[in-house]
Image (cartoon, rainbow, N blue to C red):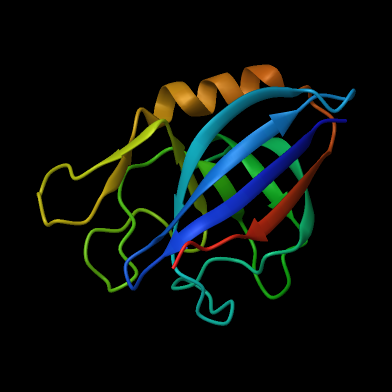
Length: 148
């Protein structure tokens, strides 16, 4: 069983940026990437990130999103995933999440160039994560370490 540690590092009205670290069964870090998600708004469906706490995750094939990591047993929520995408805007602009977490390897403002940083190289990043994990259930720990 691997452990995934998501450290939320900054938040604003548009999004939450973080770092995801993967550790193998021996506790050695085997991968690190960036994350992008909605800001926290009391765990409200479709407009909020999920609470910072410990969860379990497993590989899943989403009909809509393809291969994802499913975050299990999120209180009052369903179908919360790590998945590919670029855009998160908690104020209702360009948005590809409804509480899920996007992965990638850097932040940059991409089309439509609105001054809000997006996440890129998401597909390759997700592929690497899924290749590093077996089909068992894994631990996910979400923490907040905001740099205000």
